[in-house]
Image (cartoon, rainbow, N blue to C red; front, side, top):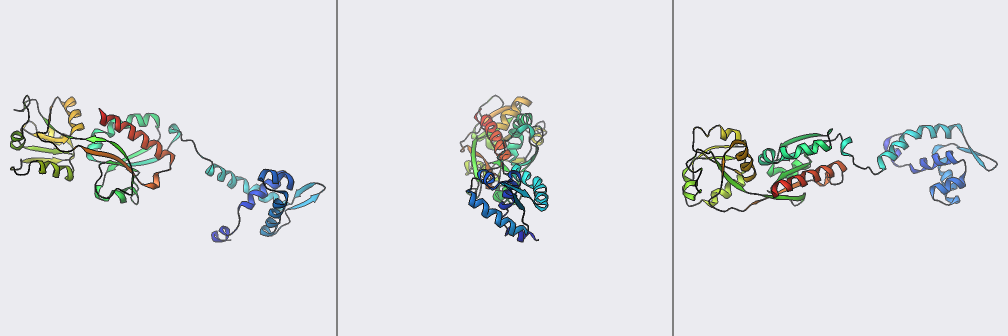
Length: 305
């Protein structure tokens, strides 16, 4: 028999067969199935027709199963148990979870958010596997569906209306400079911003466009370096009086770690909304729900500080 042939059968009858074998009584089987006695008798007739076997013979008030019925009962034990396991609602236990999750993140999120989120996640779910991949802003819909990423930490760029999302917080842009910089103890003016060379760190094209628009009408500053990682810019500090332009959260972390100075931009640009995005394919999975809540709660706390 082919799979298509099985599809056309009423497999719920096999559950009734198991109960009939266990009860050896149409009356008692009907009670367990929450059916009338006559409806259960009709089910028995359908079973006999489907399986081409009498299945039971009556001895007094008792139904005695045939050997074929007993063999069927034994063969159904394992698949029925597996079906019960599959269909029973699960309570998610982080400690027992062994799922693999893929999180897409921006350069900023990878450096300023993810390292502070992971320890608590692994403390609660030590056996999960995480893969952190670069977010593909322009292909976010595809990345979260066909490409298999489970969630993305980024700002909304392009088409995100078909994705589920949760607001994480707002991210600004700051300047970072060495303690030996001529402006280390001074207010950063627009003239200073335009005069000194820049290193642009973990800034997307969209945010770079906002920065450029804010200084339009002036000669653009010299950009000595543009990269995803802060360490490359720090290596240039002994050679250039750099203004390092980067997300505000990264600036605060780097300032604390490397004893640098943080300066606000000498002009205003809107703070950027960061969101957690995921595809509907991940909406109901218990593990996904748990991880999204952990990521969102931790990130919201970080961005609120």
